[in-house]
Amino acid sequence: MRDQAIPRRAGIRPVRRRSGVSPVKALLEVSVLAVALMIATAIRGGSVSGSELSSPPPTSAYVGAAGAVSDTTAAAHAPATDTAIPTTPATVAAVPDPITSEQAAPNVAEPLDTSPLAAAQPPSSAAYTRSSFSVESAVPFTQPMDCGGGATCQVRVDIYVPSGPGTYPTVVLVGPSGRGYLASLAGDLASRGILVFDADFRDVGASGGGYPAGFQDVACAVRFARSEASRYRGDSVTVTLVGHSLGGWVGSVVALDPTEFQGGCLAGGSGRPDAFVGLAGNYQISSGENAGDLESFFGGSASATAQSRSASDPFNYAGGSPIPVRLVAGTDDETVDPGQSKALNAYLVKQGWDVSLTMVDGGGHMTILAAQSTYDAVFSAVAAASAAKAPPAGVAR
Image (cartoon, rainbow, N blue to C red):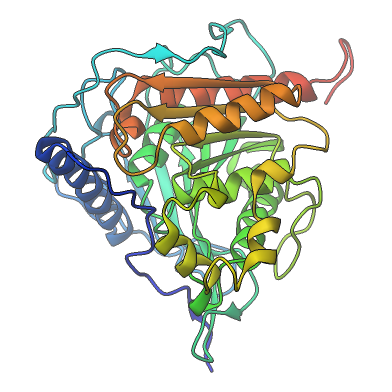
């Protein structure tokens, strides 16, 4: 059967039902998701009225890649403050963000160090000047894989390349509904000088995903970013993994498990990130929360997939060499209990890791993606990882 891209689908997003959910907050969450999906569609479609997108011939060197490249002005993307949702001109109108302040959990990141670091280290996200970037779409990073029903597919990534000479910090993004779900965040990070690999991963057991496939895909995305970053003027030494929601949980296991996930990757090297940022992740998979989504992911009930679930529990790891971890959650998240981020933070503190948690006051599951704290967490993780890998004074990296 002919290889194809991993099927596009609604995906699974962990859903926690709470009584007394505000209709306004629920509507806002849906609106933000709609904005992200509209922007993703516009970017991959190759043209958006008024935003200088274009569709030149494919430039990808990868077999089977669609390779569409588009150029956009960065000012159209996420705001510098927590007061608006990222938008694209002539596509969507600005949506007010209810986040008015941020309060830190007991273990809080110290103020960002904005002093010059390595060549790949940008200043704080709040101060970084936005610029244009290009997008190379649907680049395969795995070999043909099982995608269910006897079909094969290749897992793919959209690559957001900042304009300018580089060298750019390299970040891999993973979300619960595949590449494009985090397109707004990817575009804003690229506009601030970060090379972004926005990756798919197989997140439904019945479609060839789940455990270990989904974790292998995320680890492979890290390997691929590490191996290809220099082609896009990015840092090939230090790679930061950023995951939201279900992607945050899968990413946390890839980051904390010292035994790297292997299988089916088009790139070699290390699949473990050098830093991890978790955004509203559902880390406590043994809690029973989001049971239906977890059953879809694993392809069976808790009792039928007990071994896979144990191997996918981030609280069973963190025994290897520590890496910087930054966690962000919203106090008003109605989808995933923010207590899950607090629990992972406390666990890693106990393990002696470089970890911090920021709670966004009034932030919801989707609205934290536009919060300044999210960008600060990414830049803080990049800075910490770059500092950890920096060579001794007088020695070239």
